[in-house]
Amino acid sequence: MIVSGIKILVIRTLPLSFAILWRFIVTFPLLVIGLLVYGLISGVIAGVVGGLLNLILPGAFTLVLILVSASSSVIPVIVRTRFGFQSRHIRANNSYTGLIFPALTYGALEIIVIGMSFAPALGFLLLSTGSGIPELVSLQSTVLDELTGATSPMILAVVLPFLAACAIRASLLVPLASASIGRDPHSRTHTPFANFDASFWSLFLLVIFSYLLTVVIFVLVYGGLQLFADIGAIEALLNELEAMIDNKAPIRFSWSMASIVTGYFIVMLWIFSLQCTGGLLGFLRLAPAKEHSHETQATRAQTPGPAASAPRRSAEDLRTLRKSRQSRP
Image (cartoon, rainbow, N blue to C red; front, side, top):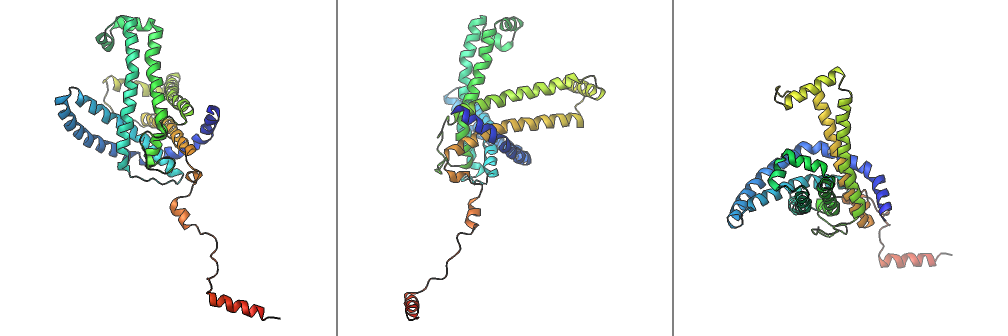
């Protein structure tokens, strides 16, 4: 089952991910503006609600802001998945404003699960290094030396939250796909957390692959720049970038730097489009065959059916026709 799911994802994910990517690039400026407006409005509302709750429950203000931030990270995933449905000419039942509540709900669950995964990792680090939380937060040199020598705690502190983030994202990809068009695979109105963890293992591997691919791409880009650092133009670019980072030179626009950053950014968008594609395919695996059609409802409505039959004759006409045939020799 897992192997067949992976084969389907590999064969069908790549072309669909590029269909999502170009739509997302075209609409990216509008999405950024929308997220800024959403962040402003939700920030004001969260500030008022969180401030009132903070009077009753200390820390509520911070919690509300975290939930709003988490929803902002989920909205692009839902939007890109919606673009994937559009590329297959599958219409949505909801508007873009209908994506806000699912983003809040699923974003909150993601941040809670990832936050909980840090608790055992942090506890293990504290026990292994004999340090306190202030020392870990301040990253004192003695603590760093202890962490460098403590391989197991470091692996646990990194791997456990990473696997938790991958697992919760994989579990939510199909529900996120349902939320993006406002209905479940069987055409019912979207039910929160319906089909949670559907196609889990194949999507889990896909999410791990996408996250690791971001690291590989970063290493390749950084390593490539370092490898060709002796070339005059690249050396000058790196020196200028280092000077701007260290505030030793004013920040100015550079076509070379803009090209590298833009290319890297587009690749990152494509990598995360793979996750959206996986969720969409997981949705379609649960849906009836009609959801796989590349025709819109409007197109199907306009498609001519079987040729219309001749006008229906009245009973009297049929009797006359029958008598005329019987009277023939």
